[in-house]
Image (cartoon, rainbow, N blue to C red; front, side, top):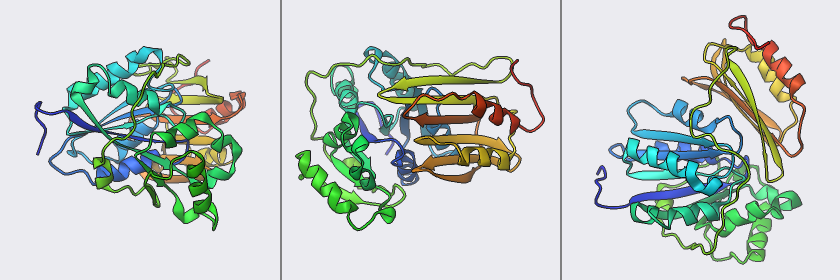
Length: 337
């Protein structure tokens, strides 16, 4: 039954560290959405060039009653939460959803998102239900993950922990995850092992156990609630840094087309922690995804413009990469001077 204004909007947070498969998991959930319901998705990304929102739009079929809004540029709670509130208010007004899914960036503070949604005016209009935290159990062995404050926090707020990519696990990975959860004093949190982000619909319906107190906003990074504008040349790059990670993102106007093999070869040798791109090529729209140094690609039916986002742990000089990126453009349009 489509919602009325007589009850609060059921909502879930789908969180997890970089590259764990949150967007794929949300795609899976949207495929299970009851046909008569309208769902809204608020996507936050670390970089300034949003990729995930466009990917979700491109993979959604017309008439599905799915509404998507992006909030690029860092964690949702920064700068007193004003950009978050603007984006969320506009999304709710536009969609009047039966369910709201919120995907914080893999480097965001989920405690503060929970605090914002469960206090003040939002406490009256949003019924925050289970928070699902995705994790790649293979990462537990790496100190840069297990000792990262945000990585730990994402597990501490979870109502259900979803160990994704189980088909890639070694013999000891599941055991290491259980030992780590004991270390964090989280043996009571349900853990499910899945492949390809295959969440179950009824996991969304669980009750929220985590409560927040004395949570302070962070003020690192800037936010852009409005769509990014393009210069006359038709593309731009934006750099961003936060929480020890650095990103660079490129946005190209829709008329640019790229040589598939050239851009594939360029991305396949790019050494970064995380890479996503939606690119228009002579073969059509293509989604590129690099996680754990493995580059994959898949076809998309449609997309609005070409976007690339690269995230690393060290600042990089992207001039050479950008020059090669421009050389991969098929003859059309013009470049910035």
